[in-house]
Length: 136
View (cartoon, rainbow, N blue to C red):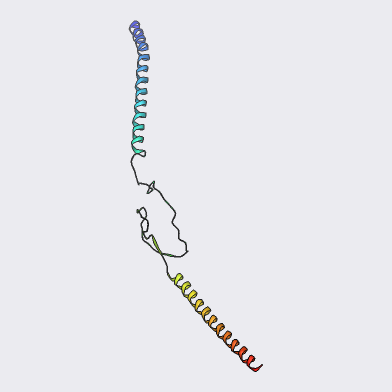
């Protein structure tokens, strides 16, 4: 009986390295297959197709500003909308500009009245000069 048990132990010892090699090869092939599957997944999902999940689009962007400052009352475009040259993007509140225009026009009218008054003073002075010459 001891001989049978001893032969069985030797058979298991001889079988164990083969089993270890087999398990090692299977694990190595499984690891390589996992890397290939993972790499293929990331390659397919990683930028070949346009996605807007994060609401960002790789496109030309530029800053929009005006030559004058003012309060924006209306925005005529939506985010991400394609625009062309000459399109109205936004409208500014016209009230401050109208106030400034009215003030400039009143100042211009005041200046015109001042000039007219000065011209009349000049004409009066010329007539005074003529009167003084006549007396001399």
